[in-house]
Image 1 (cartoon, rainbow, N blue to C red):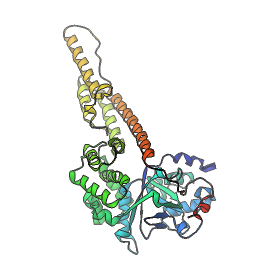
Image 2 (image 1 turned 45 degrees about the vertical axis):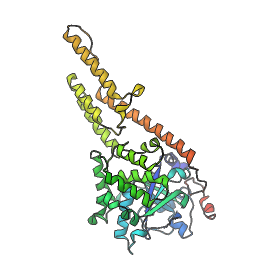
Image 3 (image 1 turned 60 degrees about the horizontal axis):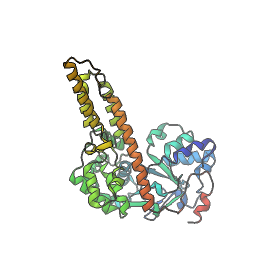
Image 4 (image 1 turned 90 degrees about the vertical axis):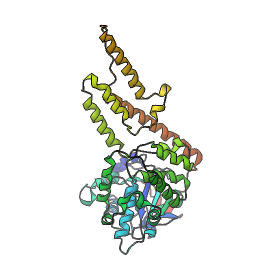
Length: 408
């Protein structure tokens, strides 16, 4: 475990996304094949000891040179991203800028299920920059590296599934997401990704039948492992803002017999949920000061917002009735109170909860739903998928990495 000045890094071991992506080409440092991914240090048989166990200056130099793409032969680090959008644009950029040129069939995009590797295999790049007191300036500005994760040593084929850029294109990547095909933008990376992400503040759209079909085709044609296909399909459809629990996507899962509906539907995320919620809470707070006669109009408006919630809430009944039923009860109470006032009876009117309170309650309910779903997915995974026993490089501040690599 990390200790001393690096002790705080251990808290990031449990904050790693379930899936990470990696793009590589013949010009990348290290080695990427269909059977393993290894660092440059492994490729050149150099020191592969844990970075957290090295001398401070040596570790700082290796981290900086790695993040600046200096491709040193003694680099024992490998970079991953939690964004397929970034990984795909990186692959496109590799094809456009690699010298000597890299062909699309030689450019790999790999996906890894981080739950299949030991705890401590990955650390966020930003956390490492901060832990080693590397100043956030120039090309090492920390906000350039959000979403990047770093591993070290070698990862075996049992933990990684790989496809190539030419396969993704052949099966319809550019048709599914036309911005990838813009020739004038092929040589850009970070700024291009930021530009593409601006669309995530738009209103979510239902996927068309053609988009669903292309996503299915890519996931089946490019990935032989059936477990990963629904993840790939959902990732592809999330290149544009979507609602969680989108009925069209659920139906596609059902048609493909991709596991139980509950297991996969709760992996669907509205990619701009945080921004959307902030905007809606702000609006609800502002409108809360309106006169009581406008309260129910506002409540009607709030009920029409999906807020990344299940679109089938309106069909639920019993103890799980949604806020919609509460609103109906409150409106009936309000109407009865108004009748009492009109007949001369003095009674204190019962108004519905404030819109801000309603929004907070909805968010809390959804967080509880998501946690239950994650627990259920984890239980299902443990019952149906064996855990790997092959060791991989982890950050544990022990110099056992070099001994382990001699076993490969």
